[in-house]
Length: 512
Image (cartoon, rainbow, N blue to C red; front, side):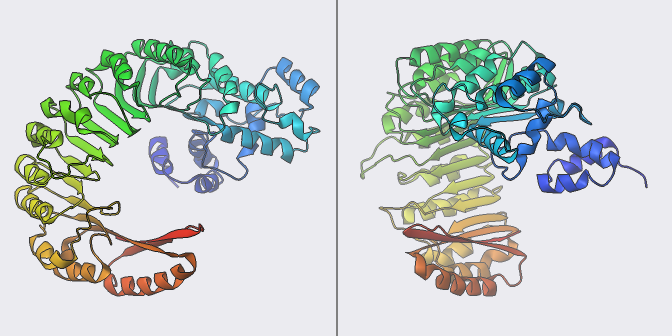
């Protein structure tokens, strides 16, 4: 049997789940040779449960004789392999650091029946128990043997255990394997945190594609954190995509630092922010932006500078969950001005905010002729007219999302306009996502009968807010109606529920 080239084999294998890869490597030696590197590309995935702890002794097989003696003498660990078939640590590409590593190590310790009392693996602050030296030893092996790291993700839910992560990174020596990171995610916030990891990576990382950072908590160490972050950014050669989460009063300082890379940064996301900064004036410095995503509670005064922005390369803009209150007052809408000045280049536009001024969708229709994807909410008949104008003028529109699920004040629905909506619905749209807060199931059936034939992708979310005991019967009735609506389509149906006092059951209808 002729074998495929290694490049083809790994291209086929790369998207397979771990459980399938384990079966593939048992076919023959050639399949094993191509599959093992992919199994080991992420040695500590947070999402993988089960017996993942079995990789621990394999890492320990690379330690020195002195370290073996240390583990045996102090912790009675002696069953460590002396050789392996592959140089497994060299295959590591993605490193996820967090509390889950301690859980895997604890499982391994208990599985091997080591003579350790429970208190010896406790999680008390600064305790030098078996977990700390084991983790540091394992990561020393990774740093020494690894050829190239593509991503590092640091996320802690138990912040008292963070100190070993700092020790882990402080052991990194200057090596090229960290020089080009696709992703550095740093999701850690604690008053004792001083950004020491930025200092540890300062001279090793030179190119980052995606930097994803969570704001530290205000403390007497915040200035040290900012100084370490500043030096880290200063020593980078290239930074392309920035995601800032939870930042509030420190946003201007962060952007004062990031402006050093304003020529290379092409995407900025500000997420989960309830900012009290005076204005987003600092965004105007980044005139090379291609993607701008804002999610949070931003007032008009904060967004006002966007009305003066000229982003010649901006193709994707998102404003999510912004609670701007208009109260019927005629105010300058900075987002409308941004669309008017830059909309000709927009291919993707998301306006999923809680409130929207009248006429914004008309401006989208007038200035965004190249739009391919639109996600919006409808607040009145004026917005529906604006949507119809978009249908008429945006001839390239392929995907539409109408999600009314967060409406609390405006209860506008499409049901009474479903025939008009169906008549205006353009043939160019191949993908539609909509919720029952926009169309009830009866109205959806009417729409699908009239205009649904051309859809290649469709998703309808039906939300059932009932007492938990009522959900099964309601879902059964709904599924029967779904079956009738979609009997001629290849569909996927998914039912979800939560076992809380109040439960939201979600039935998603999808066809592809």
